[in-house]
Image 1 (cartoon, rainbow, N blue to C red):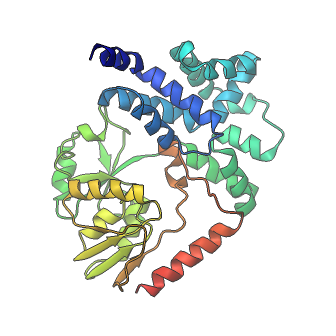
Image 2 (spheres, rainbow, N blue to C red):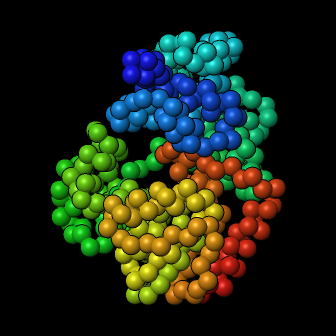
Length: 340
């Protein structure tokens, strides 16, 4: 027992060290593994409290989302890129707070006075903070001008928006939150949305009144609009690319039976937990589509995760050859149509 306790103490890291360890692993994998998955692996291997987990996540994800930009700016400011790289790579042996402070100072530098990389993909990645592979894909598909707009919008701090549950009083939930809110314009198509005008509240959204009762979920207005566009009054539905269930949860409240499917069955496990918390019933596949027809089929394919880049510092990198993602979307859409 004493040996176990000593081992546990040795493995326990403070939030800054946890964030640093995750950052080193993320860089070693050249940003190809989603940051939240890297962080989850690090947290599983270390003893820490919920508050330490949240602090590590906030520090790491905020840095990972703009890692290339911070590193380049640090090199430009200090004139020694090796020093910054070594400080990040030495992981547990370095003062993480000092490194973090350097990165945060770099974030606030005026980018107009900085000399950027000559390669257009690398320059856009460094300037915006978006992953290099994604900048290359955007430039190929969208062209330079639109890509710059998309890249900077994707890495700018996003609003914190809630979705009030359908069977809860919208006005009562808004009044009980105790923070300043605003409702998106009607043309957005998200009538159950509330945006927190001052951003993430102290303690996080889970500290707000109504969170424990599942009166609201965190969901961008754009995702809410997709659910609203589906309408209601249908008997059965299939969410073919359900993921963690952001759209599935409100859909489940609008029909008698909802089937949730995703090629990543691990995400369906998290969906089940969210559904239980929200008090709705869902049927999850085992990775194989059910042999049935549905009144409604929602196909959001293929999901790159790029919509949450500015919030979580993560996207999914396609493991298919160039051009195959369009074929994948087409195949999923055909399969979804066949289920109607």
